[in-house]
Amino acid sequence: MLMRRGEKMPNEETTRLTVTLSRETDLALRAFLGAQGMRKGDLSKFIEDAVRWRMFDQAVQGVKARNADMGADDLQAAIDEACATVRSEMWPTSSKAL
Image (cartoon, rainbow, N blue to C red; front, side):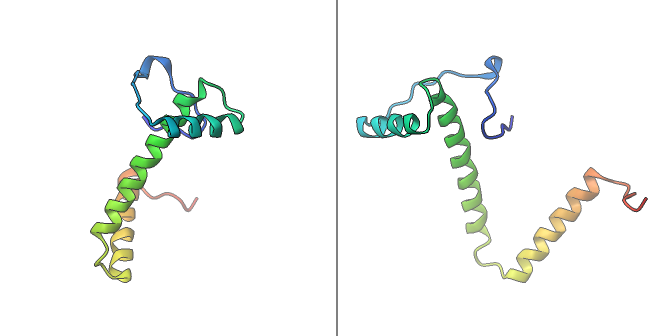
């Protein structure tokens, strides 16, 4: 399930976790959240957002590493081909010119 920033987590799909942080990180995080006007309950939302951003960043870094030796033109051609494939699967009949 993909959530947009600021969107609330549905209760029926949440999981409780125990998170262990250093005391220094805990204090810095709580000070940061407090400065942003966030309350105690907002910690879960912050962690959810941070985990999603970290996973996205890891995926992006993996793609960059796999394509590091690819030339710009070849990379753009591969992107264009992938986009065309997805578009043809999502919109099989192109009736854009009405």
